[in-house]
Length: 293
Ligand code: C5P
Image 1 (tube, protein in one colour):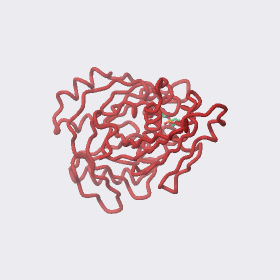
Image 2 (cartoon, helix red, strand yellow; image 1 turned 120 degrees about the horizontal axis):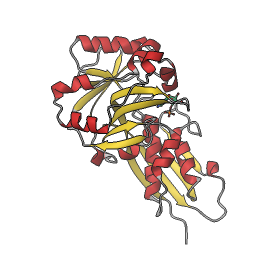
Image 3 (cartoon, helix red, strand yellow; image 1 turned 45 degrees about the horizontal axis):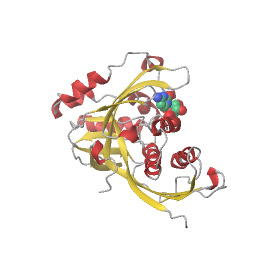
Image 4 (cartoon, helix red, strand yellow; image 1 turned 180 degrees about the vertical axis):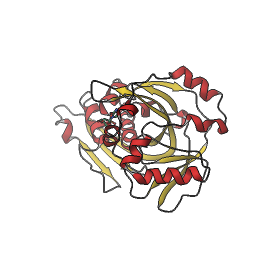
C-alpha cells in the first residue's frame, strides 16, 4: 500500500506575561521564575505534513524539511521548530516531516514566537501518532516557555517556567502589543543583566493566590498586578523600551513589558507613538488554542 502523507495546519499563538517575578538564581544557570502566561490572538501558522515511516528510514536530521516565509530566520537545526520535530522523531519513526511556518509574531519581542512554533509542531505530530509520547517532557527539553504553549489560555508557572497550573480563562480583553522599531531583547542577555538585588531570592505567591486575585479583578484593578522584574534590565540593555514605557505611562495607558522584552502591552486598542510597531489583538482563551480564524 502506498504511504499517504497527512497534513495538519494549526495556529501557534503568541503569549504575553501578565506578571513575571524572578525568584532566585538556580545551580543549573537558569533563574527561578513565577509568572502568569496568557496566549493572545496574534499568531503564526504552522503546517505539518508527515509521511509514515518505511522500514530502514534515514537519520531524523535527513527527514525534516522546514520552510518559512521570513527569510531572516534559519530553516535548519538553529530553528526551534526544526529541533521540536527532531526530538519527536527520535522517539517516533515518522518517515518524513515537512513543516511550513507563516510568521506573524515578531522575534526578540518576549512574545514566545519560536517556542509557540515548536510546541505547535509537537501538537501537530501527536495528532498523527496513535501513541503520542509525553509532550510536556519533550517541550521542557526545548525551552523554558515551550511547555506553556501545549496548554494555552491563562496559566501560572514556576520553575524555569515549565511547572504549570492552568488558571480560569480571563475575558477576551482587547490589547495592543507595541514594540520600538528595530528593538530586540535577546533573553540570555536580559537575564544576565539582572543585578544581585533584582535576582532575589524571594518567595513566589503561588497559583492559588493568582487564581483568587484574577477571579475578583476588575479592568481598573488589573494595572497593579501587571509587573515584570525583567523590565529594568531590559531598559538598561535597550533604552528604546524605557522611552516607549515612559511615553505610554505619561499618556495614562496601563502598560507593562512582556517576557524579557522588547514588546510592551497596553490594555485596550491605542494609537502607537512615532517609531513604534503595533499589533492590536485580544487575549486568547484555551478553547481557541488551535483556531485559525
Ligand atoms: O529556556 P530558554 O532557551 O528560553 O532560555 C534562554 C536563556 O534565558 C537561558 O539560556 C538563560 O540564560 C535564560 N533563562 C534563565 N532562566 C529562565 C529562563 C531563561 O536564566 N527561567
